[in-house]
Image 1 (cartoon, rainbow, N blue to C red):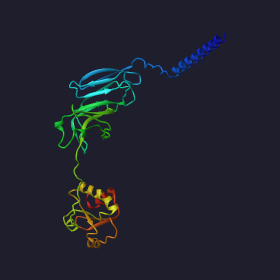
Image 2 (tube, rainbow, N blue to C red; image 1 turned 180 degrees about the vertical axis):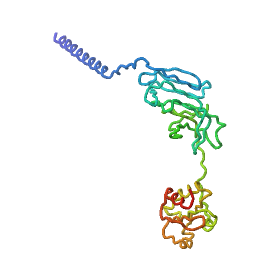
Image 3 (cartoon, one colour; image 1 turned 135 degrees about the vertical axis):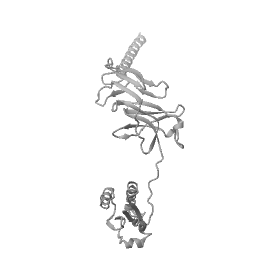
Amino acid sequence: MKLKGINFAAKISAIGILLVLLLTLAVSCQATEAPATVSEGPATSELNVDLLGTQHTYFLHGEGRLVGNVVLESPDRKVTLSMISVTTLLDKDGKPLTFLQLQADPNPPNPPADAQIIGTVYGLTPHGATSNPPLMLTLPYRPEDLPEDVQEKDLYIASYDEENGWGKSFYKKIDTENHRVTAQVSTLSKYAILVAKELPPPPSLIMTSLEEALSNGRPTIAEFGSSKCVPCKMMKPVLENLVIIFERELNVVIIEVYEQMSLARGYKIMSIPTQVIFDENGQEITRHIGYWSMEEILAELEQVGVK
């Protein structure tokens, strides 16, 4: 009887422990259970999309959020536009977008100075509308349109607007097999595939003698300096820009003082850089010591008729 009592008590204890474990597990499951999904309710507006002449209609929730994913392709499958279901599309006034159009731009802008447009410029309208997160835009290119020595990996898509000009793309994916480039678009604008081009070398300052410059009938600005002088190095791009602006109206001469000491002494040069402006007859008009800004130089050049 004693053993049976012990077995009965042990069973009761075991059942109690089991109940505690089951209760703990139930509470744990309840605490870690994912919250129920909150429905956004029915769509409240339509988004009409025109992709190169093909019409599509999609739906938006009240805050401009897409109902479902969107993947659009042109008939030749070369131009694509895709957006995920959480994408919010707003016009420039912050209201849900009602239409979106992608078409070839009939009046494409000029390319930036450091790049070349490859293929067609496309317009995404209405300009200024936004996509959050960015939509994905894929544009095609033809390998035969690429300049020599340009690789397909160097292509990128850039945006353009009238106010800011050409922008840069910080994301790109290049499909060299199908010859397409993909970029992220957060603001609707004009878009095109670009490739950087090699810029011509900066204008060189021809080391014309000062005597020759003063005798050719044009005003002259001469700088007495040295290639090792820091402010002289700062002056070089200013002088190079003067060559560009006044290519046929002004002589721009640099004199290396340590190579032409006698000339420097003849003009009583005490510090470098020293800039001296001469009129068309070779007469000194003014001089300046140290770094001289472009604005100040232009003001002085007006005094000798260079403007």
